[in-house]
Amino acid sequence: MSLIKLFSGMDFSGKSTTIESIDKAMPGIFKRQQKFLTPIHTLQRMIDNDIWIPRDKFIPLLQKMVRDDLRNYRENTPILQDTLWVIKFTSKLIVDGSNDYMKEIKELMRMIKCYPDMDSFYITTSMEEREKRYEKRIRDGGRISRSDRLLFSGNIFEEVEKRYQEIVFMRFPDTQIIDTTCCTTEQIIEDLMQNARFMNNLEDVRIYYET
Image 1: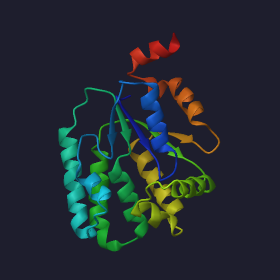
Image 2: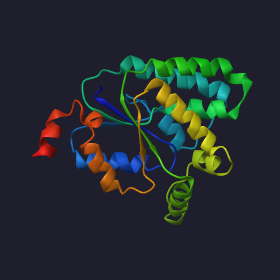
Image 3: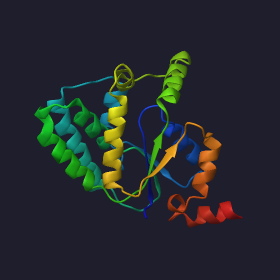
């Protein structure tokens, strides 16, 4: 079991809300990371600025980011990990079905296997619930990314999620699924505090919550 607590999940699953709630319930325990285990800001800057480049140029860039991530990581503090973005990208690349990138997919899969072991949790919900959350974000004026729009504009969402889960379980076979469809955030956090896998290596926190 690991100091890294990985939370994976597709858009509007409740993943970010769950991670934020864990961080509030356990202040100062975790270092929060998004997309990579170490601070690599290139991808986030591209997303924030809506910068998109052709895949034949982006894939080598992503591979470099992953290599840097693997080289720079040192396990010395608990990490609350919001996705490994390379897994989500690879699942989308597979579903797109282009034979032009078979070599690149194989290399990305190899790189995913190089990541250290993590205590892995997969957040999911029903498509009906996702659509409600998507519509609410639009009503509230929240940010809808290009990725969100693409996934909700066609019939590929469920297939991408299927591939995403397959890759996550392949690399982290003990992954536990958390379905947020009928659970409140408070219930999910309470369950995690009683979850032996999640609380492993967090002995000071375990003692706090048991007293």
